[in-house]
Image (tube, rainbow, N blue to C red):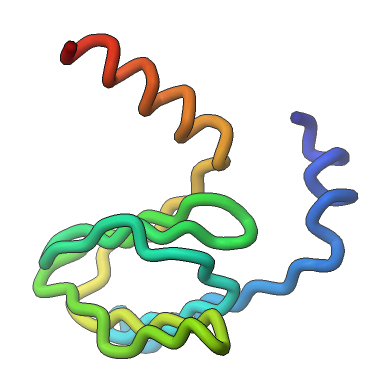
Length: 98
């Protein structure tokens, strides 16, 4: 998928990430929390998979009605991946470890 195709698909989607002092992250447009522990949170958002990494991470607020999540802790990185590439990666990794 090219960048132009992504722009046309996602024009109606608005997602906000607000990071305050690398300690509090507010995210809108969250569809699901796929996994979390004290170092990594993986979220499915309307714009793709979002991975939040750091230390002492905790989910402080999860609202299904408003599709918002607040993550607190020592946040070190945020990374998006496409939903399609995550599916391919998961299939590849599951084949290796069978």
